[in-house]
Length: 202
Image (cartoon, rainbow, N blue to C red; front, side):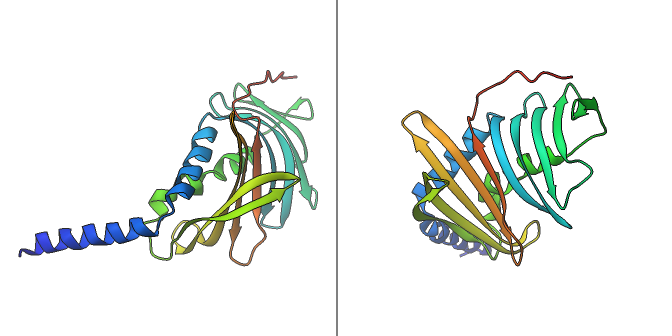
């Protein structure tokens, strides 16, 4: 048996063993959540960490047109606290032209590890997605899923959690939570997915 054939057989066997470790129903739920967010339009609430504190807020985003309207509240307060509008490449803070604010990157960036789940699964230290049951978050039932990475070149050691609420009409709410080892969790909640609003600039 040639080395190439032997290597191929080992690869197929490893792939089959890995596939058996995957929860297909959980994988499908994650894909539904990520696919819903690929619409690029949603309302959101966020609570994420900074180097020296945290920021929270809520708002609306349309990634397709890079149109955003959201609030920023830092703890401790930051220079960017207030209400922001991004539209047509221009930035406004509290109704006046302002320099750029990149808080919206935390909203979109929070999706990245979930969207890259299949890629992350090939690295050592990966714990596959599992369904942890039904929980209530802010009084709303949600299916709870989780996966993790250890010593990953992008995310270090972290746990990623999905709280998914679906109805007969489709995805109703998505909560994505990333918790780096030894740190507080970063959470973004997405609702009213696909609902476009008209953001008025000052």
